Length: 219
Ligand SMILES: NC(=O)c1ccc[n+]([C@@H]2O[C@H](COP(=O)([O-])OP(=O)(O)OC[C@H]3O[C@@H](n4cnc5c(N)ncnc54)[C@H](OP(=O)(O)O)[C@@H]3O)[C@@H](O)[C@H]2O)c1
Image (cartoon, rainbow, N blue to C red; front, side):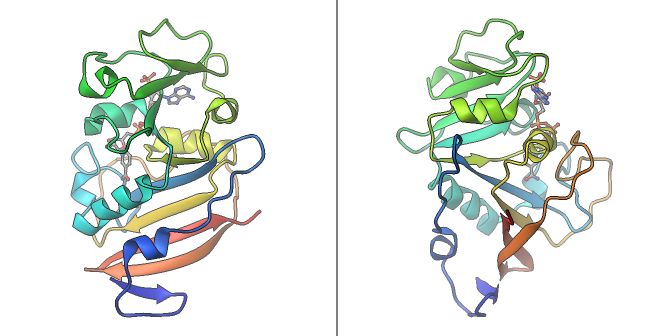
């Protein structure tokens, strides 16, 4: 793993590069979004992200998770990628949904380590939930209700659109996979209104043609 920016170096360790301060903003946890895209912005190949990722990118996901109390993920991603329970003690997975329709016998929900984030008018669910907003989840309100210091958001595009619209993405860890994919899959965000949130480049790493970038919200 090479670091290209800042301070170029030929052999750096993932943990050392990503073990950085993540101060809790007032009233909500720090939100770090982790995504992998192809060179044309694809976030989905053959219905999930596996075809975009590699072993180092998977290692990065696990490293970033180790800094988080809560993993935040959209219902579409839980269904497409077959999310299981978190591996670290005390960690929880918060799933954003409108419908509340899931297989509650699946390992994720049976573990007792998952909660749902739902609008107030969503149906009753048999697992712990946070209610915020009506019709749509009010993600800023939901984050304020989470007992967490650091939230690792893991997509997909619809959840990212909610986070971007609420301007709560403090950190973006974007892996750039060296491939052009085409197709009609979503880009990094979907559903957000036009906006211009300036991000500051914190580092660029390279391994096997993948670029591992880290951006911080310039506030
Ligand atoms: N490349 C990557 O790094 C990466 C990362 C993550 C996911 N992905 C891929 O992205 C795809 C999924 O992305 P996606 O955008 O379709 O789904 P998503 O963001 O994971 O989840 C969408 C779901 O979230 C809920 N939702 C969306 N907007 C809402 C709102 N305003 N209020 C309340 N709930 C809301 C709805 O759940 P209900 O249906 O339950 O109502 C909706 O179906 C999958 O193919 C996955 O493999 C790629």
